[in-house]
Image: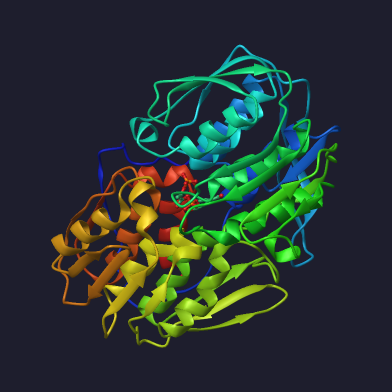
Length: 446
Ligand SMILES: O=C(O)C1=C[C@@H](OP(=O)(O)O)[C@@H](O)[C@H](O)C1
Ligand SMILES: C=C(OP(=O)(O)O)C(=O)O
């Protein structure tokens, strides 16, 4: 069993003594696993998730669905990997049921749980109370709460548009058309679409805000809905801009093998870039809606090169790291890792389009600025991102603010800067509990 440091412990981030050369098996995608759990729970027949991510966010999702009556059995099974190999791993069998309360849901600080489940709870029979970490009280939920009320749900909250709240499920929801401003989180749109097939009239979601972040995650929702038999009309399929329509209907139970989490592959690819080494990520999908796929292009522009084969993605650093000017609005969750690499580059970087990161696990723009600058860096916040002017950095404590991606960003810097100590590396358990072991394993292989 892996022993992780106590939450407040300082983890000495390993310094790379040479170029890394490693194969890293990255566990399943958080975003795919949590969507697959919701869709399987709403289906009209049992389904399978193979190689699901087992982390805090996905266990909270599974726990919440179980609390509403869904059966989720954890077994070990054999399945085909993306590259066609037979691999043995965990599998979850999901047994849908009539959802019911009373139940209490702990969302932790998982955006996917706090946004995707209130619409599910509206379909349950009985009260479902939602609560979570202190930070979950600060993350916006108004888009989901207001929309559900328009669609016919009864919700008790304290009027701030955040947790805690109770959804008084009536066993069914009218559904129909609704307008929302999803500029603070794409998860508002995904949440309403995922449960939409089970609403009496389906749902028509019209986004009326100025910007809409994380479009690949909305495409992931649409693709996964279609894969379980839902009919979804989107702007991309000839519909109106910013309007998504889901037709009411039963969902199929599927047998789904979960892709590796490409955003969690980021620190390992960054290690190849920073050390001028080589990292192979098996099972990188040839086609995916995961935002992490953009790393092939972004990290290539920053100095690396990559080759996608049937086996996976091989990423090679050249020894040089270049700055970048990039809009990350579509792929905001990649920002901390890109900022870390940019702080080590040979030219300045501008990261744009990510104002909504101030409402993520922590205010990521403030946290990255403070922590990189405390190591001697020169980062300034802009209205919608960061300016990063690389400078020689020194060791010190890198605080993580209970944000998994801050911890992995600090580890990237630690590869190149001696004496970086990460506060609470255990926070990576949100999506990648094995991070410390995978990281030292990668370096041990160097
Ligand atoms: O739907 C999803 O699975 C996610 C959507 C994005 O949220 P935002 O649109 O709130 O950034 C992303 O940052 C988050 O990590 C996962
Ligand atoms: C923003 C993130 O998570 P969440 O699903 O909690 O929004 C993230 O993982 O970077």
